[in-house]
Image 1 (tube, rainbow, N blue to C red):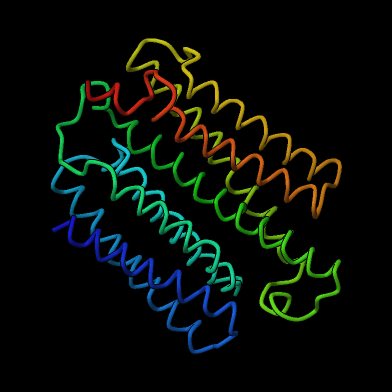
Image 2 (image 1 turned 180 degrees about the vertical axis):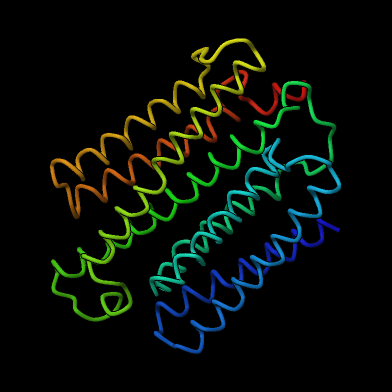
Amino acid sequence: MHRFLFQITLIIYAISSVGFIVQILTLRKDVERVCMWFLTAGFAVHTLAIGIRWVAEGHTPLVNLHESFSFLAWAMVGSFLLLQLGYKIKSLGAFLAPLATMAMGASSLQPAELIPLPPALKSLWLPVHASISLLAEAIFALAFCLSMMYLLQERQIKKKRLKGIFKRLPSLDTLDIMNERCLKVGFPLLTLGIITGSIWAEKAWGSYWSWDPKETWSLITWFLYAALLHQRLTVGWRGRRAAIMTIVAFATLVFTYLGASFLLSGAHSYATWFE
């Protein structure tokens, strides 16, 4: 059942992605409303799919690439919908929805069989560490999209193209403020994710830190976001520099997430867990 609901979710997210892109090109309000309905419905179906898989497995579905990609997409869409409650930045959907759809697509390409939980993962720290870390990545994905929107909007203004996409995106100030707020939410979550991961590592392997490749890259990512937050709060970084740094930090975060799974061998590799 959860596989069927997963496929339905992927289709709905893909439709909403196309719709958001059409909306940002045409400025049709009716398309915008339909896209929001589709994305909200997709999120509801996705939530149900994750819940059913959770019950079927008997543990939090966060232990392989299929599940983590799926949860990441769910967290991205959920964060976007939550953002809309206070800030009506629906044009963000044209950037965020395709990213979530890509994560769901990547999830669909991974083995989805229900596999018994390895001994190292039988811990209450699994849902705590994994969910916090993936939620931080989802928040940073929002910041990445906002940064891309900022650079596009800035380019339009500099070239004095005050039509087209200029009318479809929020002001530079709004994009910069929202970017900073995402950073202020995501960084504490990233920090907490690293701390809970260290505690879990000590319980599972007897060491808080072993300089595993993913641990090392997680630390590098943490320093990048820490530097960005420091520059924003103390030096007053704003605008273009902050947007570019956000994109660089997110690229490092993506490498940390995928590199440990596909390119680097270590205790955090999903392949290692199921050997």
